[in-house]
Length: 498
Image 1 (cartoon, rainbow, N blue to C red):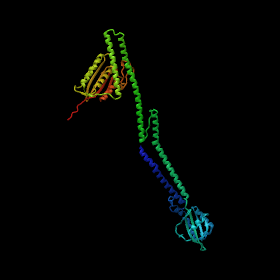
Image 2: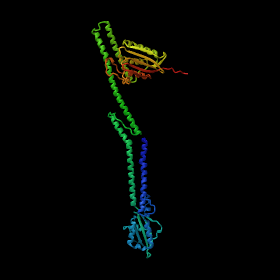
Image 3: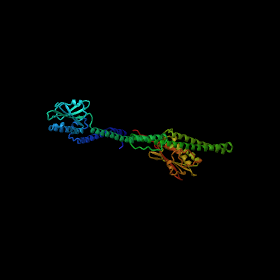
Image 4: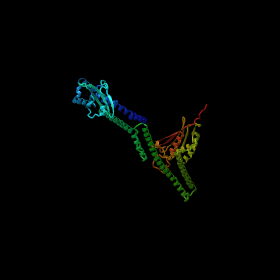
């Protein structure tokens, strides 16, 4: 499941806070339970001991409780044993294993000191004989420079002299078992924090740092002008979306760069085409003008033919320049359209009359067939539609390879549209080239010659105008037989108001 960055931050907060606290609590509880069981087993304790309670008095009290009971039994049966130093040393050794020692007082005299360096201050603080009820299960607390827990047991020797046995526990410090347990808990807590932090760091690195690193590398590549790479997007979070947007930006930059290269190439090709196509009529004009100047056109008929040729060549140059000017408007989407209602029959009839004069001059048979009603109207720019017809016809003339050329123009009614078909019997277009003939600068014949010049943008201009009129254009062709250009335009229909 893909997590958003915000969700990941929440999860990271849980990992770095709740999870360690939960694990630490579980480890502390487990270690505490284990240590309490081990502690009770080590000291033969039957009662519950809470090592984590912080109540050291209770712990020290319970540690010496069994020894206290044993001493009480001996005091009742044979109190004189507490004159025996060896016996007292044995009892004291037992208490030493429980972090306590024994003091024995006879009358007001100290007869045994299990600590071997008891201070007079502590001895003076010890309660007097029967000052407290020694039959109660309890102890007293001495608070001086050091803190002590004292259990007092009063008795009478056989000579009736008073005696007291004191079990003293120094409660200033912690038991070694508690110190070990706390060290273990601290170590476990540190390990848990380090473990969870390591997991969090790995997760953050993979989900945040790693994609940012790839993004940084990609940015450097773009800065260096390298757009030929792919930025892999692994996650669907905010950073993944950023990488996706960056990758889309890279693709668009690459496409723009490729389009610019193609555009520059097309412009260079256009300049080359225009230069070639301008040079051809200019050369011819210069030749005929020189012929006139040199007196070659000696007869009025020959002079008239020279002048007509010069005029036609200049007219071709004018058309070429006009085409180039219009192309620049297409490239900047600034074609000046003036839409109006046009009667299809009248408009295309006039166009055919204009084209017919040129076709007659070129000895090309022109056929016109109108199959639409007299009242059919379209919304179009009359001047630009005339450009469409002229460009298509000129293209047919350019590639006419038959001695008896034929161009047929048909206007058909196809429901909500009119369909215009311009058919020729030229050399045709190969099937592999047919889908590309409306592309700018595309030529079915890559080799150029003076008879098949042109800028290579005529049909692309046609397509642009038809599409701007909301229509569609396409072509069909058979090599050696001819080509047929089709385009459709929507009819104009009056909206009836009730």
